[in-house]
Image 1 (cartoon, rainbow, N blue to C red):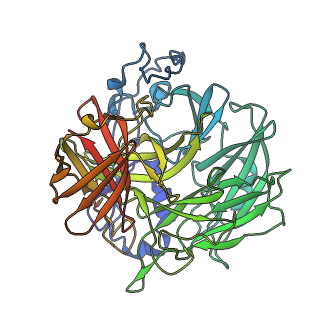
Image 2 (image 1 turned 135 degrees about the horizontal axis):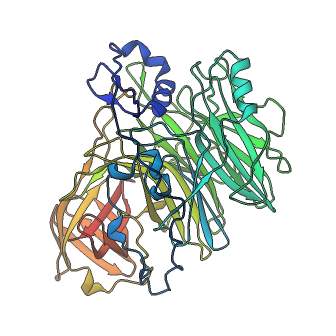
Image 3 (image 1 turned 180 degrees about the horizontal axis):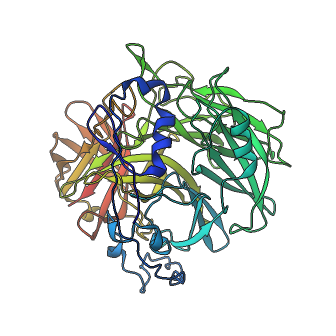
Length: 521
């Protein structure tokens, strides 16, 4: 019999999973006064025999024509997975029970590390590891640790806290021949957290604790030492961005030879903040991902806004320097008391589907051909406690901003789409946003961005959701509406995940920096 605790908040919804309650409370510590009722319920689920630990090896990568592997049925990937959610079936989790992923390409394999969580269950501590050759079929590959790392646990105990039962938000990288895994351990004490480092000679371990890269306690300067990300400059410098809630995200320089802080005890400087409405933060700020795009000679900082179960969305800022300042779409410094864009990924709903929410805390990486991807958790709105891996392609606008595919990657190639293939009816989503100040008790609705029907007509006109005109020079489609709005979007082949068929899709930004998605019906 498995015991699971549900925590009931004043808003009337249940926070599911004992392994995640501390995560939620940690982010809401300054708002715990809003919790009116705490009710403990016991949920029973039958224990099942472990089906074994010999998963079928993944197929060879698809060829350049984009043909799928013959041995894997992509339709076997479902939104929910209650039948294999119990811990006994962890070898079958594949793209399920994934939260806060970090992905590394190494040789023929992609390795993904993620937070210790599961649907309706306690998950053993240690950081989950998966691997794939094609970014669609994933094989469970074990854990980094057998238990909580001692150095991080000892720090929290020494500072008056009780360590959480699981580890959060790992970051994986390779420095020379050394693999470095940064992990987050938080506690029941306000901001008593730390980011530790473990190293190995292989991405599958064994791993050795090397030290604590940065720590935090309940004091100045307002940091919260979780959610690490590292960028390496062309000159070999390493910088870490990190943080969650409280007073923003911070960044510090690392010693490239050790992977730890260049200056002992350095907490770094603040680089991003959130806006405030009526004295309340407009939502959470966490999960940074910092990359360097060598083609554009620019550093990009992806961040997570809002509550992780509902309105969670991805923003991106950029800078010519690894430590900022980072500017938004309008050239405004992201370290201001405001909200910034562009927002390139957010909760959404295409027709015939319940929608996806909690779409953030991303990993950004590229393949051997220079194609960038974004990986993140997403929650089906039919039951927001399921946590699925979503992985999409990233494309870059002519003025150097990343935009993401509206549909998950499904082996498609980047061949140009012929003009006659774009003629017809489409679903279009504008990733707009409604400010709802607060955290989990306040942001109870996902703010799903809904699709509307738009037609691309043979005569060069647009019908449906606003009249206008279009021109096409593959792969870019220029859309102009009669209300003055314009958008230049990247057209690509893709998969209609909602209807299980191939289609054509587009992504881009309009003239106001709003992400625009399209999917041909």
